[in-house]
Image 1 (cartoon, rainbow, N blue to C red):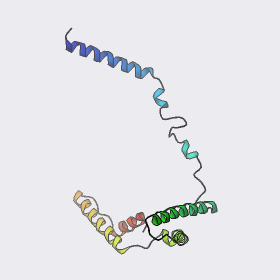
Image 2: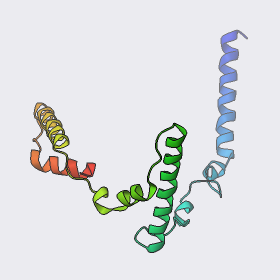
Image 3: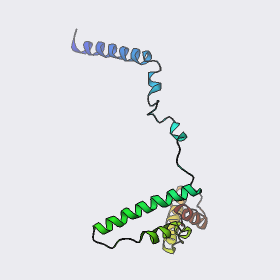
Image 4: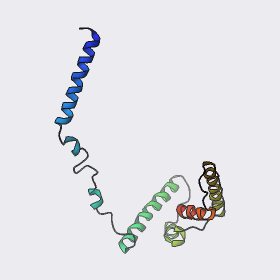
Length: 145
């Protein structure tokens, strides 16, 4: 037998063995990723802690923020800078006005430029342009402003 025939015979035998191994494995491949260490949805059943609206949730949030601010203050002291006033920083972070900052006019103008550019691209593709003001409001809401 010449070399080409040997290669073909070996390839066919290997292919046959692979097919037999695949069908002989049964449900073995179905169990991959399952079990206690797998990500098959049971992690959603685990407790995520108290709801943020509850008193326990707010206390946990305050404790975690206090720890982060203390670590930030410690790093500043390590660099030779003045330490943070943790209580004032914490009250600033926990006030509702800090969570919803006022709309920055420069940011709004930048978003307007992006929307206009997007409309120009849509027009070149033959698509209907977006309402600029509505799209700006939507983008600003998505950005949290």
